[in-house]
Image 1 (cartoon, one colour):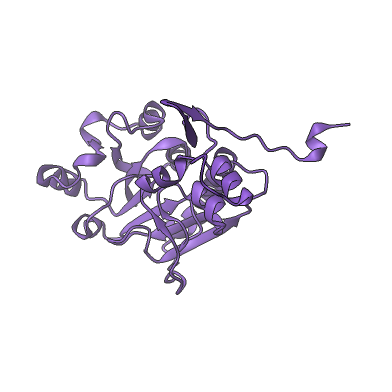
Image 2 (cartoon, one colour):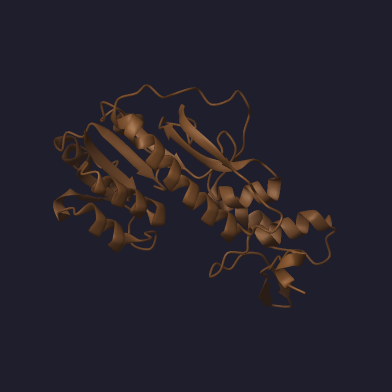
Length: 255
């Protein structure tokens, strides 16, 4: 199985480590460009990839890049926290398609910041392994697992839980995919939810003279609590004041 890997961030790095321990054949790697990449050095080291087989993920629509990847004769693509929409032509380059690991309980929270929207909108939270199609997180599901959003979760703590569950789900189902088991079912016939990256800008500003339900305001602030990222704020004259929320259960406070 010749694998072309497209990935970013901690989960992609851990998945690559797992694949390497299994001695899987990674024939090429697509990464984010500077400014968007996370865990880049770790990913490169884990992939053990020569420079000629490392591609800028923002340039996959280039005919030259397409032909170079085609020449690697990959069987399957693996996309993990890869932030670029792939064309049907690119997906069809892989005889076994491309599999994507997305940190939401599809069809809820397609797109960006699923950890934020599960808290703000009260939608189910979880992780999903699915086949890629031309839509955004709309392909047939291989497997998924729900993750409980607790009342004390912030955007950061929920994100960490989703990271952990993502790796566990991938490690559980990759051997079955590798064996050629037919694991796919259409996404539930629900409308689901979708959010592009810019949607968080609509909730980040707290208007001091606007009426909010206490629950809704707390959910926005805790959902956007994820140091070192700035998150929610309000204006004090010409100065932005940023908010971070700490939530503790009574037993956490001790006697």
